[in-house]
Image (cartoon, rainbow, N blue to C red; front, side):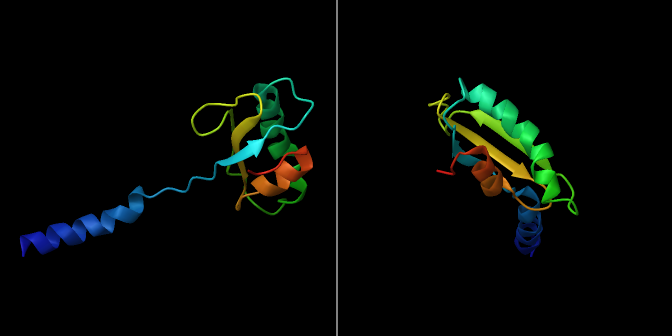
Length: 101
């Protein structure tokens, strides 16, 4: 009986530990001298360019780190997202002239 109670308690806690990873691998468009410059613009543009589209939504977060999932290609790729009540990463990537890999 105790085992069933412990198992049910653990099963109830599992959804609390889950998280959504919005990061997407984005190509840094030509014209940027570094991935850091691109990331600075990305975060700023998430606040300014997307606001018109998401005017009735709440801002959640903007994130950008130069490089891929292993930290390589810091001048040509970045892990980024732009999230209001829903993700706008793909739309912002298109306006930046970059693509989601």
